[in-house]
Image 1 (spheres, rainbow, N blue to C red):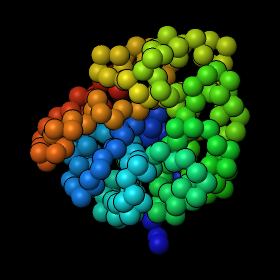
Image 2 (cartoon, rainbow, N blue to C red):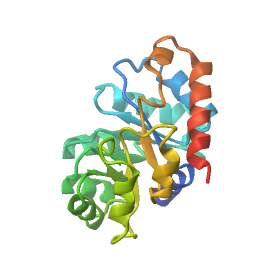
Image 3 (cartoon, helix red, strand yellow):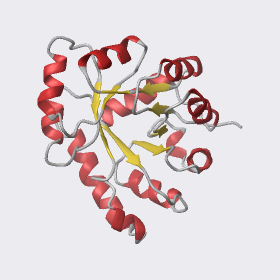
Length: 221
């Protein structure tokens, strides 16, 4: 299948300029098009659908065809919760413009590199974070960041300022500024951004409003 071709460097630029990856982890993706449109209308520019839903590859392929923002360079769509080599291949085959993983797996990074697809593996300790970087991670997802806090990011970056870190887990409107002040290039947000109640009610205006609040907070210097 032919999917929008977006350069890997352009994808990373979108993520680091918008500074927010919105994570969509839902059991029901039947309203994915409407949800994504609401998020885009609210200024979200990097959206990740997770493989915890078996329909994600099909839905991502459909969204790439429907939303022009994913082909004109204004937004990017990726797949998260990639845990195996086969899942990486599947994500790439359906057109995912970036891969996110909760773990470091060299074969996933190799698949992404071969396909010229951005990859953001998850790491926790300083050793894991550096290992991910050395294996070719474009951005390292510091996960789970909830129990670490912004101070951890600045502590890791003090001896390794070349790292590009994206804390994920426990990030909210209150601590976003602290994470960026600590040196994070982006943050990953899911449940704090997408209200389960609003999604279940198909309350798209509420999703637009929440997306706008979070996208503006992420871009604020």
